[in-house]
Length: 267
Image (cartoon, rainbow, N blue to C red; front, side):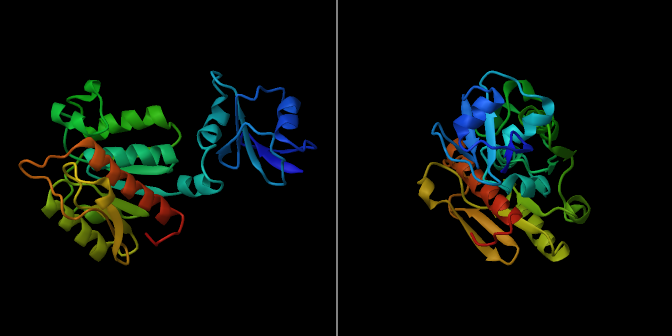
């Protein structure tokens, strides 16, 4: 039968995982079959995708990307790798969205922000002490390169304005709105919907404070517009932005992006 092992298609007479490991001369440290890690001696079938990974051993460079995607549901990585996603605003939402999409293997990311990393960002944003003073675009690009060196990361250290939105975001499959300012959110959403009709936008509203995480949800508001959050708990005096709810909302946005890349438009 033909199966794929560690990213390479092979012909084998092995009928089980253990037989395959013995044939390959590899330890059974981590065995993943069709995206699921198992210690059982599973029966192999035609077209199975198998990874046999030895703990503590650095794989060859050409095997590394495949192994990073080993836990993905089959066929997801190929669709994600072909996609282009833009993130406007690299604060608590945008920095976490970017890191999650990098781990998901989205092939091309555009990171747009005009600001620098400062100490109060560290309570919820995906930056480190050694990023302080760097433009957020540069700091996040460095971060992503350490997570997934196989994706293309383009940065634009500019303020997003109505006039430059078509130039910045044309050609991207999805734009993530990740601003703090309500007026900037509305400006980006309205301009993308009006001037880039083929682009889907995933925005956010209401993730401040520490109210129940179960209030955060994803809704489709228009054909190409999705909103994540509770639409109520905005940042204000006495109701700050904190890591848990911000990251939950960022996870909603990133997951909706992935669903859209896979052709799933329902929330």
